[in-house]
Length: 111
Length: 234
Image (tube, rainbow over the protein chains, first blue to last red):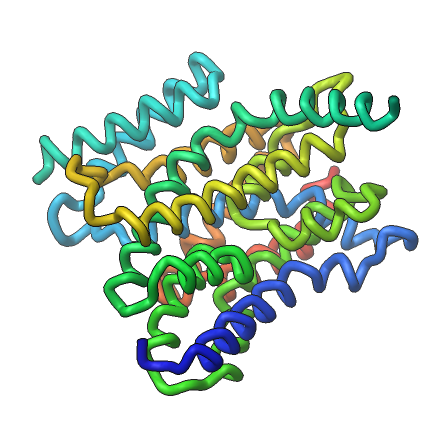
């Protein structure tokens, strides 16, 4: 620990305050008693799939195509997840199989 | 009498919500433990790690904040950096305005604990019929919150005792996002918007690099969605 206890506590609160600003702002800007502008209602519907797309890419941002194993474990695992999910439509099955497959690939195949 | 009834309503909602959170249970225990272990190596024991997880509850920013805790004291920088790293929550809030409507005091708790994973589940999964909407969302939020805090605690206390290799287990969260992405690809509008999300973030990654991709990608997505509003809705 480099900081004092008080400094650490203040840092934690500052981080929390920043996080809460991003979480509460939309709800404070558009309170539930008032009808939000039409474009906000539109964004509320259009954003969830787009943000899921963002999260998928965000999770893969550290994968290097140039260095070994060239993102192949991720590619295989995601291809299997997509195929399995279109076939069986079972959320936990797709996630479970995909994760175990990925662990085998990075621990035993591409290591 | 009403208390017993409301308890039962909560139990039913909790039982319906729990299975949806199992992937998060796995992922948060692994990542939360990794966080606890890392904090430990920087000289911050269980109390500090758990406090950070309970009060700030913001996964990736907590990892960034480790560098702040090991540098000169600068709370303003911590606050501004936290806003930047957490900016994606702004769009989660916009997405949940309608779903979190009319839930009374519980709403503040739902907003406080709105993280990537909770947003993913609560925006993709509709509460089943006959299940109380408020308690369903509350169960998902509180379970995910609890997993993260529990993982942090376990990591700080017994992180070094883990002997089997968990390498790759954190991929469970990527898998969760991929599957919930597919789950949202139901209508034509959703498909277009999902592809805009993938392509926009791909463009953000290409143009701004892995470290700074989130805010530029959010702006690209926002502009494309607004510019194509008439076509996407038609």
